[in-house]
Amino acid sequence: MFEIVLPQPEEISENEKDDAMGAYLMMFASWAIGLPLPLFNLVAALIYFFVNGRDSRYVAFHAYQSLLSQIPVTLLNAGALGWLIVVLVSPARFSTVFLIYLIGVAVANCLYLIFSIVALIGARRGEIYYIPLFGAMAFSRYYGKHAAPLEKPRNRAPKGFDT
Image (cartoon, rainbow, N blue to C red; front, top):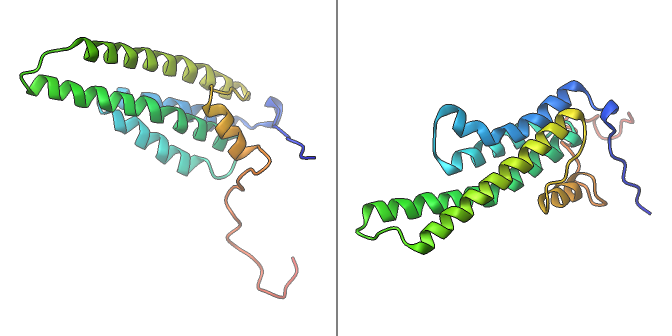
């Protein structure tokens, strides 16, 4: 039987807590510099994941969960932006379908913001908060039975030598 061992808050260093919290701060990346580009947050989260998710499963879990949870919201936002551009450039007017889509996108963004803030606070406390759907995927990848290893050792002794 496989035993899952999760780190407890007192076992996680302050740096790991800060790095895990930073993964959720990527949602504010484009807001902070004033860019309304939907894909910028996703690129920032992807870079953060590859830079900070190598040394600690705790940080990797949070960075991966943050990245996964940004994908649907980013796609919805990109769709809204693209549709808005089409509506503004073409003689078409705002339709009821477009308005319903915008309301749905706004609701999705609010839910994403709430879940991310709750996860951010939990990460800073050394806790693992599971965002619905994405938390299970991140857990499986970093703590599950077939958890991915972190970075493989680069330096090894020559063949024939025991370490």
